[in-house]
Length: 84
Image 1: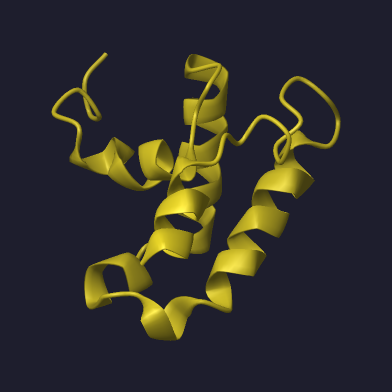
Image 2 (image 1 turned 90 degrees about the vertical axis):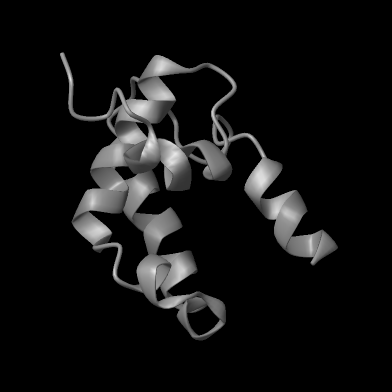
């Protein structure tokens, strides 16, 4: 469990190079890494579509300088998720 917690708490800034031509491919690369871990995820997390994951990742990275994977996975649970 400790390793999973560390992964969730890791900042995404070094992984997703915000504001560069690489940010989209970086977000997809992160999603691809997580696809291999699907067997360890619960059914709700497993159903999280890759395209939605990438979109949420980019939104969170742009909104929060110290964004983590935990922030990305919890963003759709935020009451403000579907508001302007």
